[in-house]
Amino acid sequence: MELHIGIQNIARELTYDVDMSPEEVENALAAAVADGGIFRVEDSKGRRAFVPVSTLAYVSLGEDEPRRVGFGHA
Image 1 (cartoon, rainbow, N blue to C red):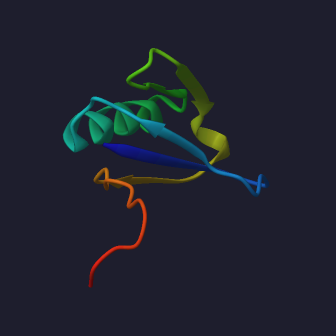
Image 2: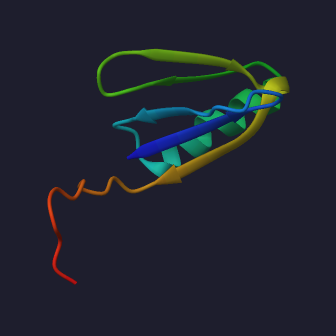
Image 3: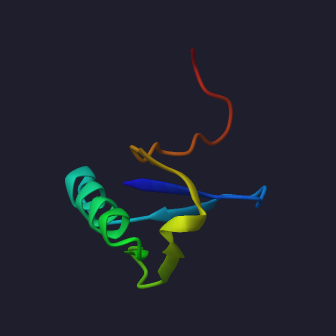
């Protein structure tokens, strides 16, 4: 699943491919917001992001889409 994290006052978003379910991401985010702490996420390659919830602008989840190569048929 693709996870997009927007951070306040930064034009570029963080994008991670995670092995978590939407519910797991939502629970981790809710726990971080309740604590006023840090939202932690790990991608499928083992990279980690630690974002203070006070700086979060948004968190968006989306399904992975296969990339199209060449000339697609409509």
